[in-house]
Each structure stands twice: as C-alpha cells, then as structure tokens.
Image (cartoon, helix red, strand yellow):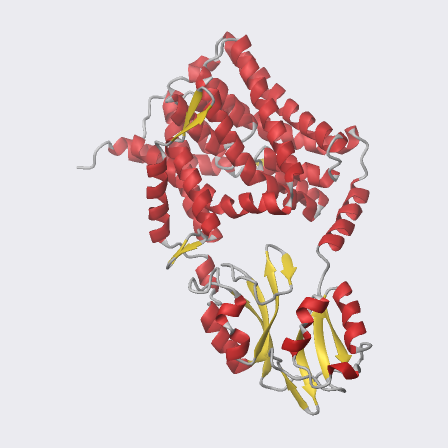
Amino acid sequence: MIPNIEGYIALIIVLALGLLLGKIKFMGTSLDVAAILFIAIFLGYMGIKIPEDFLKLGLVLFIFIVGMQSGPGFIESFKREGRQMLMLTSIILIITALAAFAFYKAFHLDRAINIGIFTGAVTSTPGLAVGIEATGSPKASIGYGIAYPIGLFGLIILLNALPRMFKVDLDLEKQRYQDQILHDYPPTFGQNFRIDNPNLEGKSLRELQIREITGGVISRVKHGDQTFTPTADTILHKGDIIRFVGTEQSQKKASLLFGQPVDQTITLPGSYDIRWMLVTNREVVNKKFKELRLSDKYNIRIIKIRRAGIEIIPNANSTFKFGDKILVGGTKTDLDNVAQIIGDDMKKLSEVDFVPLFLGLLFGVLLANIQIPLGQIKLKLGITGGALLSGLILSSIGKTGPILWTVPANGGNILKKLALLMFIAVVGTDAGAHVTDIFSPSGLILLLEAVVLIVVAVMTGTLIGRKVFKINFLSLLGLLTGALTSTAALGIIQEKNNCSAISVAYAATYPFALVMVIILVQLMSIL
C-alpha cells in the first residue's frame, strides 16, 4: 500500500491548478510558478499536507542546477563587466536587506516571515529556499507570498516610469550603447587581397605570423587555378589571391601587408565548403587548438569562434568550450572528419548526463556542514549553500578527466523547473497552516514593508548607477532586473526597448545577485 497517498494526490492537484493559474496574464506578465505557491497556501490552510521528501529533493536539485548554470556567468561577470555593475548590485541588495532588518527590529516582526518579505521583494526563490532552511520555519513562504506580487509588478511599474522620472532619451542611450559595443567588439568580415608585396614571396604563413601582426586569419588561398585552405606551412607567392577575415582594423593592417583589396572572386571547388560546427565532444573541451592540430591533420581552417554572442578570431592558444560554435572552411571530407572529432551534435545540448549531476549533488551535501567564520559569526553553508557552491565551483572547472561539469540549458531547465515545482508545493502547504498570521495587526506592516523594499531597491540602484557610476540607462534597467532576479521584468523591458544592453546587464548581474541574496538571508537568519 502506498503511504500517504492523499499527499501525492495533493501534490499533483497543487501543481496542475497552480500551473493553470500561472498562465493567466495581467499587465503583460503572469505569476508563472509563483501561482503554485498561492494554491498550495490555500490547500495548506484547508489542512492538506505533502510529503517532506519532495521538499528536500526539490530544494537541493534546484539550487545545484542554479549554481551549475550560473557559474560561468558568475565568473565571467568579474572578467567582462568589471567591478561597477557588481558593486552596484551589492549596494542595492545590502541597502534593501538593511531596510528589511530595520522593519524587523522596529515592528518586532517574526524573523522567518521578514526574511520571506525580503526574498519576495527581490523575487528570489533560491533565497526563500535558504531562508526556510536557515530558520527552520515554513513561515518564510508566507512573507514571500505577500511580497512576491508587489516585487514583481512594482518593479515592472517602476522600470517603465524611470525614464520619464529621470528625463532620459532611451533612443539616444541605445545609440550610445551600440557605438560602445562596436568599439569593444568590432564585427569581423572577409575581403580578398592580391599579394603585391614582394617581401612576402616564398614566405610561409608560419614565418609571416599573420594572426599576430594583423589580428585576422587567411581562410582561403588561390594560387594559379588552384583554390585551397591554407595551413601554417602554406607558401605565399606574388600574385596569389587570398581571403582574409578580420575586423576593420585588421583589414587596414592587411592592406599595408598584402596590398589593396581586389574584387576578384575566389571560386570554391566543388569539394570545398564552409560550415558552422558545435563543440559537443567532451574529449576536446578545455583543449587548446594547438593540442588537436586539426589544421595540420586535415585541410581545414578554423575561421572564427562564436561564444556567448561574441565572435572571436582564433589563435593556437584558443580553447574549445562546450557549446562553442566554430566556423570551419575546408574540403567536405575533411569537414566531416573534423565534425566527428569536435562532436557537432545538437542533441548533446539538450541531454543531461546524470553522473556529474549526482556527483555534484554529493559534493554539495559534503560542503553543507562547512562553517565560514565572519568575525564573531560563523556562517554555515547548509544544504542549500553547499549545493550552490558545488555548482559554482564545478561549472567553473568545466571538466575533470572524462566528467564534463555542465548542465545543458534545455534539459537542465526542465529538471530545475520540476525541482522548483516540488519545492514550492511543499513549502506552500506547510505555510498554509500559518496563513492566519497575516490577518493580524502586523499584516499591514508586512504589505508596507514589501512596497518600501522594492521602492528602496529601485531608487537606490537608479540614483547611484546614474549619478555615481554613470551607467548607460538601458544597461541600468537590465541591471535592476538582474539584481532583483526578475526574469519576468526583464522580458517586458527587453521587448519594449529591443536592445541587448538590457539582457547583457541582466546576465552579468543575475548570477552574482543570486549568491548575494543567499548570503544576506543567511546573515539575516542569525542576526
């Protein structure tokens, strides 16, 4: 006989009704999975219980996958975006947490509910998970349920009002951002040149060090009637026609080295092709181009790499990363051989390898009891902190022997959402038994606190970001959605303004904000 079959039926009912409610849109957005929380709280108030095992499994799995998927962005945000955005994200969250702590002290609020208000205002479900574990009370989800709609819709309303409040021309901000992007990441293109420089006669590409001198690469060479993919040992002759790929600056350097561009085309033989390929073979991940020596073994040329939306001109020390797209030119037979070596399997981006998943979960559980001394305070990671730290560390390592520490986006998101659904359903029903606490003199205080926190967070970020850090306003809008971990707000602002500045800032700050919220919740639970 199945134990507590009513609890399993309740889980299915909560998820089904919650998902249906979550699809209903208001002001262009919806509650999504947060709707499950409200259904669960109602059924919990009616006396329904769901087995706690679903909470523990959903909690650790959800947090670990968040860490695995956020890890690369968390590390890269330090390298790529610098300190400004991360400093501002820290300031926003710390001041918001201090405001929540002030409400807690001034009105003698329940600690767990107050933590829930904070995590709801910044729409952080991982933060809620940590708060429940750290306080040992499901009451945090009551505060979260109160503050989440205010945090979500309040952020959307404020983000739409900010340009008018600060008299900002978003079209001008968009143009400034695009000009900066072109300066930082100039696009690459190809041009044909005739070798007119007599000093290049009889010299190999290895001797000439084309990549080092110009910053670009030669992808094709036409010598007489023959067209082929060059290698490092290819000899150039006066009168040869070459195809050169690089930025505008690289093309200018190429003109000085080779001669002026020509309109003459380089007709490709029937056996020649140019193809984009995906790096999906775990054996080549983290290996440098010079280790595999693909250009030496096959008649191919790796022309450029597309990684995280940025095009990179490769060199011998470039490294293969899982999910990279590389543009390769060569004979069709050689391209087929290269594709087998690097993988080029779209299905690999959707499949989840459960070996690193469970090993990573084990590592997270082992980290759970580690205590971090912060002055007189000892901060314990707990199962949530351990799972998050495990995901961040392993994803930044990338690969250990045959194990690839990655959770592909498609498959990982399915697992993460399933884990989140189980977690929310359980905490919601547990919190339902305490929902009457809202209908008390402190209930209005909790609503007021939620409003104050979202206003404080947005206005603090906008004033400091604009006046002190001089951040592009569109980037600032994206930063606010990332700092407050609101994907829904990101979608609405992005659709309205159609500028990558918003999503880039969100991606740079969101992983860092996840970690910051978890740390702040841990501190709020012991102070």
